[in-house]
Amino acid sequence: MGWLALSGGGLWALARYQSTAGVAAIAPAQWPAGTRIARASDCDTLILLAHPKCPCTRATLGDLARLMADCNGKLKTIVLFVHPDAAPSDWDKTDLWESAAAIPGVSVCADINGVEAQRFGANTSGQTILYDLQGKLLFQGGITAGRGHEGDNAGEDSIVALVHGEEPVARKTPVFGCPLCSATTPAGSLSRKAACQP
Image (cartoon, rainbow, N blue to C red; front, side):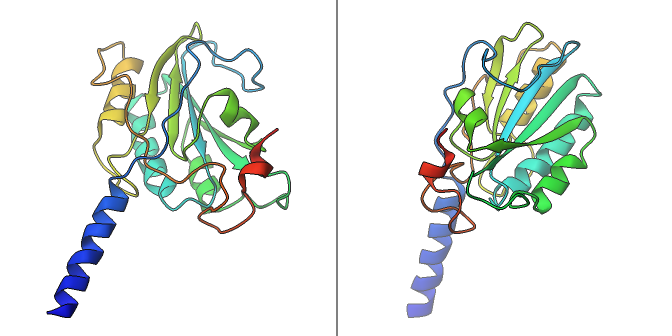
């Protein structure tokens, strides 16, 4: 009986973890003037903020690949991986970086000290923010239905709809991922909050 209770408790804890959203972004209504990220001049621009060692982000990148295919070249996407100042130069060059870089239409950059994450108001790995040609905010949220859960979801559907000029399911969705800058990171140490502030 004891093992059954432990098993049930473990499953409940896992389900709760998978369905607990991170801190949502408060993205600027207009493309931030101080950013070093170039907005597309011929299509909408999607920003994805990520922690290079967040296991939840693997599912986000899987859904991003499908999203990009569904957008048929009508979307420019930039994935920004947070890179603490104190970290070695190759700290962010993980399999997640390689996976993101392999997606057609996606550019990958290091976000030193989380400066761009702050400009875009992002707190959680997997946060996406969509802007139109004029730099107007169209959507902010996650593109997975839960932590590490790849598959159909409202965020992905909404971005695809907006890119094709259709009404989205939602303009904001929960983000499921690890903190971009915190005292305890998936990898353990280097991305502490103090190191992520400019």
